[in-house]
Amino acid sequence: MYKSIVIGTGPAGLTAAIYLARANLKPLVIEGMQPGGQLTTTTEVENFPGFPQGIMGPELMDNMRQQAERFGAEFKSAWVESVDFSQRPFKVNVEGMGELLAESIIISTGASAKYLGIPGEQENVGRGVSTCATCDGFFFRGKRIIVIGGGDSAMEEASFLTRFASSVTVVNRRTELRASKIMQDRARENEKIEWALDRTPVEVVTSDIGVKGLKVRNNETGEEELIEAEGVFVAIGHTPNTGFLGNQITTDPTGYIVVKPGTTETNIPGVFACGDVQDTRYRQAITAAGTGCMAAMDCEKYLEGHMVHDWSETLDK
Image (tube, rainbow, N blue to C red; front, top):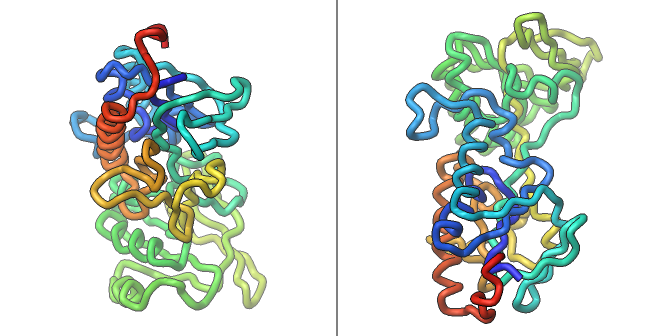
C-alpha cells in the first residue's frame, strides 16, 4: 500500500515526485520503458529556466530524479500493464512486481511523437531529426529545414521555423493539405516556405557531418529525388500513452486525458493527470513540470481529506 504512485517520469512525473516526497508522502515512481521521457532523446536544452548556458536533456532529467530521491521518492523501472480504478485503494498491475495498491495515482505517461518509420529517421533523432520546432529550431539558424506533414501542426511548425532557417520546405504525401484554411494561407504567404507536395518520404540521408537531406518519391512519376537540408522536422502528430488505462479515464477523441479546467483532476477522484498526457497544446518541458507541481498539490490536498490507511504502521513505505 502506497500513499501515492506516480506512473511515468519526464518533467511532469519527476516534479510531482519531488513535491510529494517533500510532503513526506513517500511516492513510488514507476519509470516505464523510457525513464526520463522524451527529453532523454534530445541533446542540449536551452529554454528550461535556470540554465543560462543550456543543459543536456538526459542530465536535466537525471538531476530531477536525484532531487526526488533525496526527499524520499522510490523509483522502479517497470512497465504498467493495467490498472483498476473501480474502487479505493486503486490497483496497479506492474510487470515483474505484481499488483500494487495506492490511495492516489498521478498519471504522467506523456505522449509519443509519431514517426514515419523510414531509414535514417530514428537513428538521427537529436542529430538533425526532430519532432519539436520550439525545442530545436534555434539550432538551425541560417540552415535549410524540411517539415514533414500537412496538418495544422506542420503549418505552425513551418511558420515558426522560418524565424531561424534560411528556407523551409514542406513535404506532404498528398497534393491537398489537412490543415485549416487560415493555417494554410498563413504558410503560403510566407516567402521562406517552399512546397514539395505529392511526395512520399523515403529516407533521411546523412553525411559525415550530419543530415544531408530527405529522399522523396514523386507519387505521380515514381521518380526519387533528394531535397537537401540540414534539419528534418517530423510533424505528423502525437499519440498519448493512455492505452494501459483501459478506458477507465475520460479522454478526448484522440486519447488525451481530460482534466477539470484549472486542475489536474480526472473524472475519478484520487486520480490525477499531468504533462503531455493531458496537454494537446503546449507540450513543453517547463509546462509539463508546472502541471506536475499542480498534480502533487492536488493529490496532497485530496489525501488530507480521504486518508483510509493508518500510515503510522508502514513508515518504511
